Image (tube, rainbow, N blue to C red; front, side, top):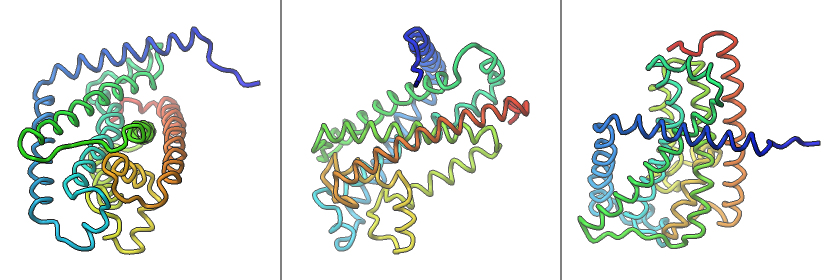
Length: 281
């Protein structure tokens, strides 16, 4: 018979997650330069890149004809939103273990009577609200600077896709957090992964511009479907396949990523404890 967590265990887990979230928020506000960087550099990069490119350099023809109801600007904006959320998995959740290693506090965390997943959830929850703030701030900034208005065509579908994306991001972040125990060149791997996702998942351009063999690789990556559905729900762009089928595929892939990430993190955590390399960096 399946054994489910008791109410006391769930209450304790909720308290742990809340404490981890509060702790991460307090640490976050200790670095105002980082906050300014997130709320100035990222939106400025998007305005300079997307607005300029969409207005002046996107050629008519193959690319713009595949956007469906979405404008070139809208395509870039929702790609930018996806990239912010995806970056959470690497630099938010995934880098958490490395940060604790560098600060020399990870051993204390591992001997504390608290779940490491709860601690990582605290970082994830904080980055979730930070992401929302940056996305909303960028939309307001764009509206204030020009004539481009950001809107969501299908709010209910958008909320569902947003939840699916964040579940997948959390799972992928746990994979990266686990990898931190095994490798020490974290920044190289993180940057490489980010550029590969941008290049292979059609974040800032339609997949139709990729060669056939490369497109097959793109179809094997879960984040391709997450980015595609996010744009479809928000702006009505064309999808890879039937939208209903794609939502089902994305949900299955997201759940699979979460289960994989949780299992992999626990396995690598046990490995690091056995080998005594938790604090090695």
